[in-house]
Image (cartoon, rainbow over all chains, first blue to last red; front, side):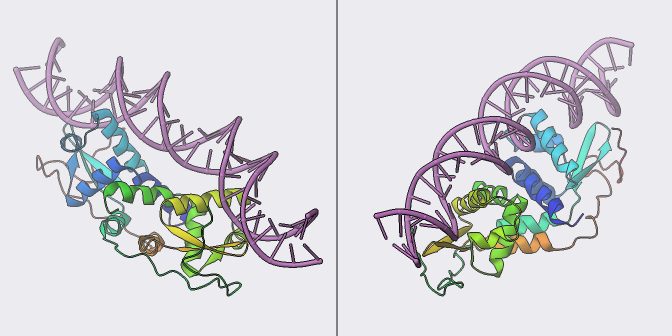
Length: 113
Length: 113
DNA sequence: TGCAAATATACTAATATTTGCATATGAATA
DNA sequence: TATTCATATGCAAATATTAGTATATTTGCA
């Protein structure tokens, strides 16, 4: 469960605006489906589908209370990932001075097309 | 450049095993295309396509040295994201005790289908 | 100048993802 | 028990992603 394939599955699953929003909300606490309807501008079946995808990826889970389904965060990688995504990066990484293979070339390099 | 759409684009772009591998290698330092061929089991055109996708997403860049293209990391979010992806998570997040709306229900909840 | 090396691009076919819509299910309530 | 509320499921259409194959571009060198 900690190999690269599993991690790729996780990020593939969260790489969607609606699903990021859902997870963002779940960080704050448990929510049922109708709660999501108030701030997501997508249909109820679509919300259900996204929740289902998140659950199948092991990122969230739910418990049943009457006719409500109360969803909550399950996978601990999510808060960490969302933290990084919220971070504000202003500067690019420093570029290398030259090609480490030939010890030649310059940066910023010539870009011909 | 720091809105949710941009972030989603970034994670969408890295959500592929080959691209994760490429970025993992670039963390160690500059690499040209043929370097990637030695450890990625995919064709050269395919590597080029992945590099192109990563570059269009602003994650990497390159400079030209003769007939080599020396690629390097550009976007500072990448090392942070890869760190999280490498982290080892053993336990699930603690589940909620009950439904915060109705103050009823239990976790782990009844799962009927 | 002509060839080979390094890399990119174009196009296509296969496959996956996303959404919308219609409908189904299960629990609460009248 | 019939109805309604909350939510899920199934399926089809639209769209996006991926990989493969063929070919093009650029550069260095003989």
